[in-house]
View 1: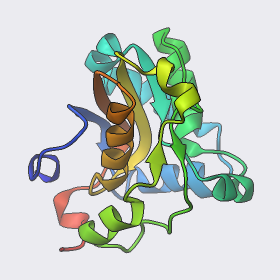
View 2: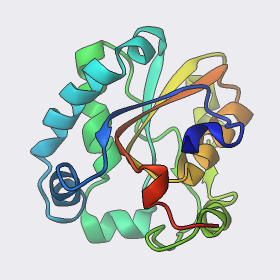
View 3: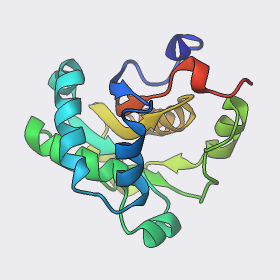
View 4: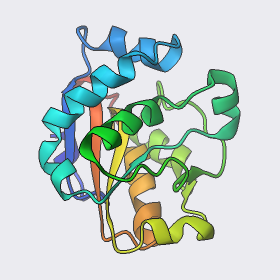
Length: 182
């Protein structure tokens, strides 16, 4: 499996579904068509598929969007899912603890190596926010897991800031067969 092909900075991951012809349209509507109303649905899916991770998580953080992309899109789709998930789980929601310090290109169409290079050192926990994650088990939330490059970058930044563990919950995961070869 894709997630087992190399060690990861995040300890475990759960996906609510596969990224396929059944889920793609809904996920893209959230991501690009202002359908933030779908976030609650995805949060409910994650509350079931990642129940074991939610039980262990002490805080919940979304994968961040760079401020320029946030200005264009007006919202961060991962944050839209993470917020109701945290509320339902009764866990602190940390929307600004992890930041994307530089704008990155879209990951779409990139190989696994290209994706890792694209997000290398792109994520950081600002010094003023470190106390929110120090010694805590963090559940990182994103919309889609492809190669894991973005989640890996985020997890490394959270661990460097003192998180005791980083787990990952995504709405959908891409199968190995869907990822372009390296």
